[in-house]
Length: 88
Image (cartoon, rainbow, N blue to C red; front, top):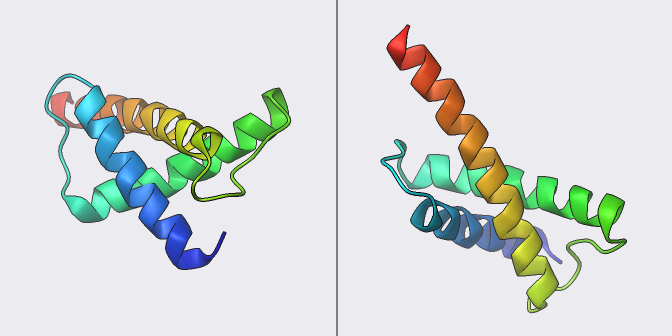
């Protein structure tokens, strides 16, 4: 998968993760892109470790599920970090 396709995947996966998680997450589209790309990388790494598959093909359902799952994890961690810093 090319670099631009990976950025598009990360942006869409981050937006879907924000839509799935309840609550009000801060950040605009730049934060969504960064969290989505990091989440896609995390999902690909976890997919390779656990299931033996990674993020290879843009139009594969496993690629999208791994990217969205990784983005959910990254968004949860980001929410915990920003909530903690705001409350302190």
